Length: 332
Image (cartoon, rainbow, N blue to C red):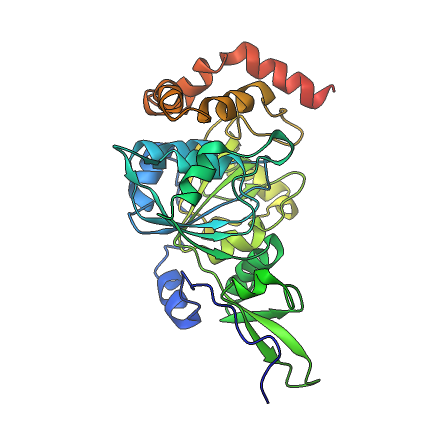
């Protein structure tokens, strides 16, 4: 019997083959050894041209800004991206699609990109997506999260009733199937194993055990689905502290390949219970993007021309500005 939904017409950018993913994950070292390095070292070692990248956090919260800057500075090319709740992280990566810097983004699984929530739309993000140089497939935030969960569970697909009967389904790579128990139509969603994920957390020990406060959204599953995981943390804490309270560990060490201590590492995004987002600086980004030449000057000052994330923070106002953002979050 012909299914009423058929299948989506969008391209599938990553293989849902669980045996293939298992081979890659099996080779990951499980030894309890220190993994502390700089964000620049982590990106050099673990992000390759052509990789499928996923960025953790949720919207403007817990953005792994430092490795995203490094991906742009190091001119990584031809990346695919899981555009899951992506706001400023997508805006940063689009800076790599510039004349003279090649094409950082080549493929995007789109759920939420270009928009910076209430702040408006990224003019450069629109230019990149409307140029036609980036191949796209449509999903929803929920279905991308389910795809990470399927991968974390080690199965090639999962099912849901979401997207059925919508244009999003038709522009996705999902397929309609019949439930073998009820005969009802459900959407089959392919598992998604990113080559590398970048995730910012509140605390981590040198081995990679991580704590997250507040909303974690899909990062629990993303850390288990990704073949390589770069973690940045606000604070590096002793392993003994993790052992004293293991129930607060959200991401275990055996999922993590690199640990980078980056205080204020979600800037200019929000870090729950730590500091508020820098709305003035985010507005600067949006304003600068309206003019391509002005945007390049802006990026040269804040990203391309900065040696590292610490220098970026200094150029954005340094300790005085960061202390003000901390006061806004803790004492609103």
